[in-house]
Image (tube, rainbow, N blue to C red; front, side):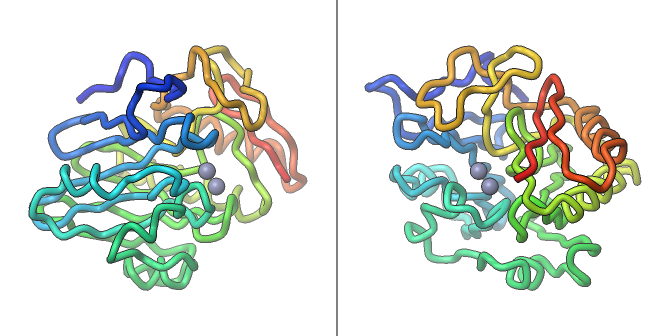
Length: 253
Ligand SMILES: [Zn+2]
Ligand SMILES: [Zn+2]
């Protein structure tokens, strides 16, 4: 289990459109090069014995399908999303079997009763993932917990960068529930989001729309970062506030 010492920000003319990193044999992290789109999102491909789950398809400005096809072998592919913003669903039309974008469709697919309070599940074949609804950033947001690797995938709701929050009340409640899920006996090794928007310097962020990311912060966040975010939101209270922390910036809009 490993991460690159430093991700390539994907600005060199000769680099691949997608960087493929095997975290372990059955867990692949794919980064869309910044050169193809300034969002430079991270996508996750989780392999079970029967099925493969691709979480997000990027902005659609790069050819993703061949990369995924080569990695999944004979497995059936399911495509789902951390949330329905364009930089995470943009490549959907390259795939056949894609989960719908609305909260209702996401809840139905993962068997989540009483969105956003229930917890869903998907079994990829000897690999069970828990699906936790966390609306607040977009509306159909989910976090994925992988019991095997203890990775927690948080999309745009927690990553090293600007956490845009249009729905403060929903976001606070979601982070509360997510922290509660972890505390209830689901230990986390790393929190992995969908972007990096900070250099490796506490509380600093790149300018919006930056086309290069020198000295990027690592992708992975310590599990304590979720606790820190939850406590900061609780302390901030019901009025939206910008919160600058070492490894994330809460950014109401
Ligand atoms: Zn988003
Ligand atoms: Zn995004």
